[in-house]
Length: 357
Image (cartoon, rainbow, N blue to C red; front, top):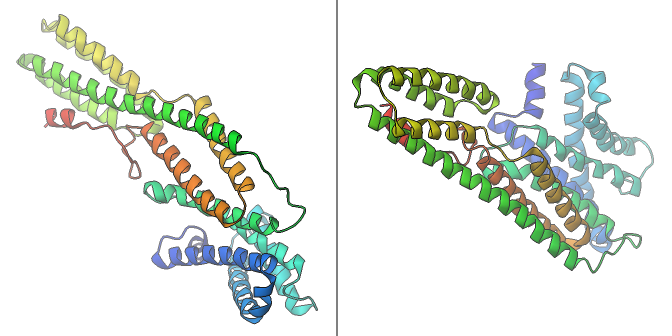
């Protein structure tokens, strides 16, 4: 029972669990919206104060119920209470509950500060399994960016908030540089996909020329099937599979030589196989990829800070979706032989599949 409740809250798999997770996310954003109304639109807040107070109390009740459920059903209560998210959950709920007991106005400034802590819960989305497709991967980041931009909109109304101007040139130059970085990686990964597909077709062509020799057909069939399995092998230990494939290729060469098969055809065959196995393990250097992630993150953070108001919120959504989506798409292209369920673009192995039938 304990595990079911915690899994329902943290790793929802049922429709009800997913609905509740989205419902909590909406309440988190609604909290930010209500604080924005209180801080930036005080006249409207005074007009609808009773309605807003009701909504705030409802949100507080939901999060309090969730906190109680966690405290009751979590196995290691001490670990949860002193964990990062445990502290966030407590700070977002307990002060509001105390306000019902102590003579503290529910719209006091310090309570609004603690309500803002709820936005940190959006970070949990990154630790959960992301959905399939570009949207499924990018939405947690969009949610986080939107949430924190909403918090900044609150601060932008204060006189002490810095007004950053004359950044257009710098932002444009960085944006262009970022486009070059993304474009370069996309070009390299796209070429790799075509190179692998071309090498597969050349290898299959060589085998078709050699299959007229009946004595080598069984060994060729075995080798061809193993090549297909190697290309389809999971990425996590594909290096071991490639090493095994290289050894099998050496053994297959012995069979070819013992049956008098050689010359330019087999030379081209081995060259193409070596090239194919080399490209299978190729990947963008980690330094380049890490630098690209840092630049994208910093660029989006700068835009979040320097573009104020609702316009900044819209720009935040667009930038995170476009840049994040491009990054995930190109990153998937950098693993063209993963063949996982959430993979977007894979190398086509039709020629090899048809040959193995």
